[in-house]
Image (tube, rainbow, N blue to C red; front, side, top):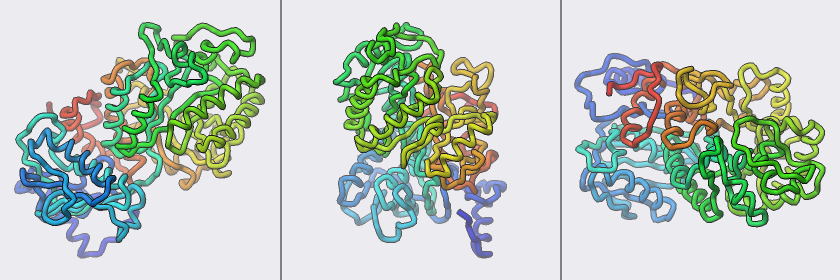
Length: 537
């Protein structure tokens, strides 16, 4: 969004910058020593807001503060969530009330004057008497609450009473996302992660306005979702993981629905993935009839790819696919169902195309839109499909053009370039976790690219958003997840949310560094990259 600044406004910006307050688009200058250092500048937020207009007195949360909500369940739910964040650290009661009058933290959904905010935008206004967050939809209100959290001292994230003070800088933030799809993928197939572990990651994603959780539920090493019509998929196919030393695991239908509900409470949509026709050894080991020779292979605990395939010619294969998609679609209220489609090296091109021509209509039959890895564009993506591009800078021009051709025909593109945003790539050669097949991906490399012009021939309008996948061949604990996701995940979130005009590594790394005390307070393990000017510990 281009900002047209009058001479009077430009003068105001220079005065604000001199006061040590960050303004999007304003050059930093020497801070004024009279500024209250307990107040976080409005612009020091990740992702960077679309528009910041600082000024006026800060609002201070006190023992008398009330959270004032509209008389609707969705707004009250956001208010209750906010109260749950603030109460432990402040020690205040912070009652949630639908009494609109008086000071406090006001959460409002309004159709009036909010048309430009869309479904996820918000306006946050702070002054001496109140902080008011206004949105058109509940998702926008929730995103505004995440900004409010970042404007408060990092101690607000503690689960025990802290000294405060709890001040929010005066001024207004008006904020809308650049892209509608801002995702993170968690591979629970190579190593299984419990419901509580996934919920912990959901909370971390929500802090940075991620709105999609892509769950990789099946692979060669494990099948992780109960399917009533094919029960051995979970009980046998889910009984192991990479390395063979752990018990594996799977989600019951009740557990999966719990995860979906929890994600929805944080305004994330779950996209489940059943990878096919390759990456299917767990299924092939569970049911011999899915193999062309009728012989079930042993369970697999290695890390090689490309060796497995469903039997494309057998009718039972499509009975299997229909049952799995039917049951999974019934559990998933979101729009998309991911059918994988990558690294099907054991399937001929002709068989791959034939398979996708049969499977995509099954997805539509059960009310979902197709999502697949970008190899789907080698077939004919269905109307409304999303292709997830995971190639590298040096991926062949022919493969990139295949994706671009699909985009020109209406297929939406989600960008997940492996040498930029695969969170399981090592930061440096010495990183104890992760892999390096796509190269080493330090923090700057993961941030310093533009989704809008990344793929030749793919126009900005075809790009639906970005997603940061996290594969788990080497990861088996929440600490492992966090160390590889942070600090790269917030940068990917910013690429998805913030206007291209705010994209600048030198200013971003300062805002990123300011997140470290918050991660410490939340107990998030992270990599202290030498590229980032972290505060002294």
